[in-house]
Structure formats: structure tokens, C-alpha cells
Image (spheres, rainbow, N blue to C red):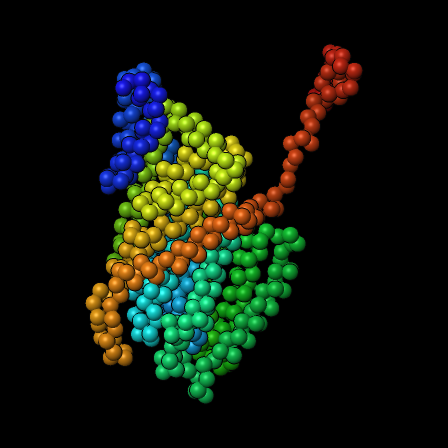
Length: 562
């Protein structure tokens, strides 16, 4: 028995951790208890030195002193303030009225608002619950298919996982030892590409199954002009002028070859500022040049876009670190809540309580992970994992495929924090030794972990939606019709197509790493073979003397110190 433990300590330790997690023990305590238990066993068997645990206090203090993790409470607080200040309601009502006349327009509005909430909140629960409370009754009222409505709300909420400032990207960057800013840049294109795939799916459903995604009826459209029109032409003219100003501004302000994410963020900022200024002048001077919907869209959507620039734009252009960007975002969220006159002590206390709870949750898991990894590395578990993964057929691609499949399967049982703190520390060093870009690996894992929120039966997004979806038939207060309840089966089946889309996104990131690695396109490429070290111009210190070294003369020394 003792020989068996000595030979297979690492796999037994990892297997015990999996068993504890499947039994339902808290992740943080399972990790810490497992690390301490096997550390004591290793010391008793003579495999480990008692001095091993002397490094434990330093690891704990290292976690507490990690400035990068300060971004977690900042972004969480920002998201909670925005969610409770009514921004989601305003966005959903406005974008719903804008796209509602189209088939599938309400579902498209939910996806777009989900992307905007993701770029401002970074909290999945806030997005899913807000959209479930606001948009689900409207979609059911006008005859949307229950599976489509449930699926699009749950999937749009999970965009907070991949679109910066995602909390999981912060954790992944910390665990992989890479810059949070680089992780945000790498996630930029995959996040919005996934948003586009969601919209394409909704459009396809509206085309081929129009009864599943009808347009809202004319009587439900609130922004009607005195002439009877909807004011869309006015909005299109305003947007066209703003886009023109944005294009000209980008040409004047940015150089050729500017990084793609900086280009996008700057373009959005200039477009938003131009539209907001024109709409503001029209309203103050009462020119009457814009329709109701044009003014509504401008004044509701531009402030969140400005906050996105304040947070992400300053990070992308190098003005602020992610922690500083999160701090500015938190202040910006408080200012927006004050402007809407919705900031009060109750809201502030709720946001601070939830932020503290989530931050403590993350820190405790990280401390438990540090204890586990200390012992796991002490019993050469890292070498065991390395030999296990480097021996896979297919080289780098085989490694990435196996890691993706493993993450997808574990996502049925573990949430993204647990996956990030357990799997990533094991596979990150192996990937680094194989020469795999760790930012690419992190984004691949982030898109894959996103499915953990959608997996039946344990997906958290499905639970969040189940908590706010109607469990019994009810009478709609607007139409007076009886609306059927949304069953758990509807929510589960509605998530399946979006899980397939997320898997397709994983494959795209796997096949086209340039979607992620563009983050380093503006960095100088250095070929190590071309690097030469010149130690001087005399004797054996760099001169060509036919291999004969000579002592430097007094004249040489004098010339060196002039």
C-alpha cells in the first residue's frame, strides 16, 4: 500500500479531489483539505519535507497582495450598480421598440442588449435575471416560441463570460500568468463574433419559422410621430452623419496600422459623441429635427457606450491598467445612477454586500487552489500531467482538442470559477512548454467554459432564468390573454441550439488563432537567431583577433570610462 501511494500519489490526489467535488463539498475547502491531507501523508511517507508547508503563508499573502485581482470587486460592483439602476430596462425597452417591427426583432434586441450589458457589467446573473424579468413576458405576450425565448435570454446573458470586462478573463489571466489587458484584447473579436452568430440564428428562425418569432403589432409601438410614422428615417440620417464624423475623426486621430481593438473602440466613441452632441443640440434648441425614437435611442444607448470606452478604451489604448479601468467604471456607474436619480443607500448596500460575497468566494477558492497546487507540485503532479498530455497524438492540435473536450465534459458538473482554478493551473505550464500562446489558450477555454452556464441540467444561466420565468399560467395585464407557463423542459431544449453555436465558436477559435493573437500584431517581432551580443572592440571582448584573447590596454580602459 505504501509503495502504491509513493508511486501514484499525484493521480490518487487528483482523483480524490474529483470525488469530493462530485459529492458536493465546497470547492475551496475540497482543494485546501485535499492539499493538506496529502501533504501530511507525503511527509509521513518521507516523500515530502515538513518545510514544504512553510511556503504556505507566503502563498496566501501572495493571493491577498495580488493587485490584478482588485479588478474583480471593481467590475462586479460596477455591474451591480448598473443593473439595479434600471439601465437594462431602459435598453431593452428602447432596442425592443427599435427592432420590434421586424420578425424576430425582440430576440435580436435581447442579444444586442445582452452584449451591451456584458461590456458594462460582466456579471451573468445580473444579465439573465434582468432580461428574464423584462423581456420574457413581452416575448410570450406576442407569441414567441417558448424554447426560442428562453434560449436567447439565457445565451445572451452568458456573453458576460467572453466579452470584456468578464470576470472569468481576469481569473484566467491571473492563473496563466498573462496580462489582463492582453486577455481582454484577445477576447474582443471572438466575443462579438459569437454575438453575431446568435443574431444570425434568430434571423434564420424568423425566416424559416416566422410563427416562432413574430413582429410586435403596430398598437404595441409606443414611439409614434404626429404624422403617424415611426421616425426610423430620422434615426438613420443621424446615424449616417455620426458614422461619417467617426470615419473622418479616425483618419485624423489614428495612424495607419493601428491595432484593431483600439480602432473599433475609438470609432464607437467618436460615433457616440457625435450622435449625442447632435441630439443634445436638437433637444436644447428645440429644433424638432429628430424623431422620438431617434432621441430615445441616442440618450439611452450612448451613456453605456461612453462607459464602455471609459473602461475598455482606456485599457486598450494603454492609458489605464485593468484595475484602474475597473475603478473608473465603478465611479462611472455611480455617476450614471445619480444622474437617473436612482442611487440610494439601499441600492448601494445591496451592491456592496453582493460584491463582497463574490470577491470572498473568488479569493477563498484561489487560496484553496494554492494549497492544493503546493502539495500537488511537491509530489511531482505537474510532471505527471505534463507526461500525460505531451504524449497525446497530434502535437499541439491534439493537446488543444483533448483539453477542449475535457473542459466541455467537466462543465456539466463544475462552474467556470472551479474550472479556472482546478484545470488551468495544470494545463497552463504544459501548454507554455509546447509553445502554445497562453492568451489563445485562455480565450479557447473561456469560450468553452461559457457552455458551463448553458449545460442542462446544472447550467447556472438556466437556473437564473428558471427563478424568474412563470411557473404557472397567468393572465397578461396588457392583452388580458392567458399566457401558458414556461416549463423547465422549454428552458433546457431552448439552450441546445445556442450550446451548438458556442461549440462552433470553440472550433473557429481553434482553427483560426488569428482571431485572438491579433492582440500582439503591433508588437515588434524579434528573431532570437539574429540577436548578436557585442562586448566591445578590443581583444577577446568582441574583436576579431583570430581567437587570441588579449588583455585590454590602459588606453582601452580610459576610452571605456570617458
